[in-house]
Image (cartoon, rainbow, N blue to C red; front, side):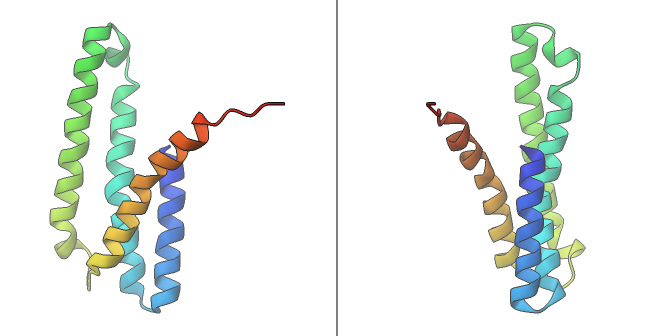
Length: 117
């Protein structure tokens, strides 16, 4: 899932840079994708630890903990965006962020389809 989000983010950033003709749109969109991909990767790594899979109760608490970490990192990245990305374009950042988040829905819809042969 995280890899698919990274691919979509890269495509969106490349399109933003090409269509708008300025590098700031590319970097803004890439940063927006990063605000989804990096925390998602962090959560995936945390959830695959041995501690997270010990018992159902521990697993549930671990999920809640890593979800809070993921949200906190995402918010921190968004707050830091104006300082970290020169000539930040909020629309490019937000479009990339939303499209990367929507990868979850596409994957769920695709997974839910059953083919009959």
